[in-house]
Length: 596
Image 1 (cartoon, rainbow, N blue to C red):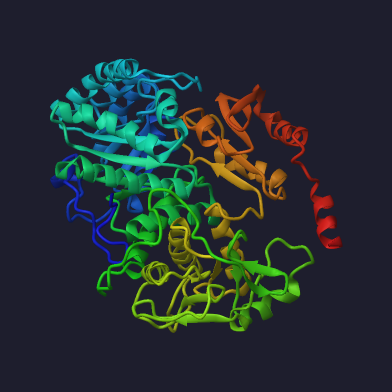
Image 2 (image 1 turned 30 degrees about the horizontal axis):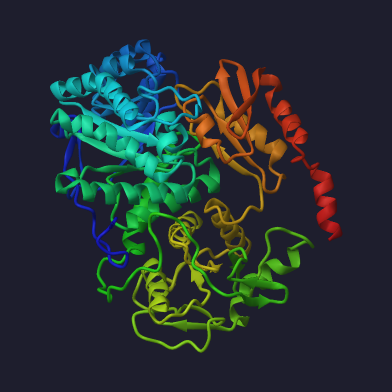
């Protein structure tokens, strides 16, 4: 199976065009040769017409091309009529997407008023109970018929009204039926979406797109690659557009890094027709990041230099780190083998940050680039390596984007039967003017994240970020976002929407203030139950809105405390962490680090 024409040369995936609204009157065309479309979501209660209209106008003002609005009930769906009418009276023709979970009748109502209806195959018909059950083939077919019976009316209505459908699978809300047959896997996500697509096609309805979202960038990348490969297997007329996004990415640098890894790596491979960067911040901020990220893709993808095609060194559909021997970077620090991916810095960065690093600090350089015994090569040509323990990298100045160059290096090493550890670089050339920090962050995240997701790389070096301390911190943040290291508390925080039962930004800040010193602890902060239990499957603890003013606390995906008043919930979360022996007092942690 192939997910793109070549991992070494950019080719935009040719998808069929689908229309959202009237392209002559504010609508958009997705797919084909059209540019990637950016979208976001308003965060207020859908019953608040004034605020819904204002937030939509604010998004459009900064360049949002599609606005999503949650519709949790038929009542909310009915109010979409008022929202759309008010927007049109303001001269705003932006297409509106109704976000549907659990309620087919809400979807049917929403279809009357909006250009797009998004459904989640994991909960449109099924209800998630984490039940374990073995299905016979006959029983499974009966379940598919049940889905057909409930989903077909929406498909027929969308076709009659010339609407668009988004089949949006979420890693956190796969149905029990899919989980029991396929497990919590990319294959399960893809098959869940394809079941709904087959129903749409049965009614000769093709105006739809897919999404495969996860809070884990590696999982997200695997899912989209597998989806595209499976669509290719289904046939040439299955070339439907796809929407890219990392869900529950969080806020600040961490949210931008996770999104850049997942979305950026796929865009560099020519995949993606629409994108959303989901941040636990005010929605208009997402649009700036979308535009900044899209602007980097032509620079980071190989669009003009033909290279010799070679067998890839990695399985694009299942993450496995490339096997290498260990090599020493500095006294007491090795990379490769079973070692974690290490962080290398330049001598200039070392000179800036070394005097400020405390004993036992988690964020510290693990090698100095100029002192390394590293062989640097041009991967476009044959080269010899003396032994497998020779650290190897791509030399600066070659006319290839870094992603292409390092994929080519790994493939060539495989061809010559070498398993040398690889030092990854975020860039191979430098302009006269240092990159703006926000751009340096996106570029490094896309390049290093894409390669790490391929299983390539044993140490990383960031030089695009000019600040010494910033480049060191960025390196560790990328490794944590890619799931390779854990040097600080990891937060899975959803962006707000009309379903959210508390102020996500305020509560996230409150939880961080109490827990951000907890190294290696993963906390999920979910505004509602839609993706909560599923996305928290690999989190240690979860803070989930259960009702207005009430919070449910989870250990993993298991709820353990219910209906806690919001005013008490953060401290009860701390107590829960303490009960499970994951709590360390901030002062005690710092004292211990200083003593090492």
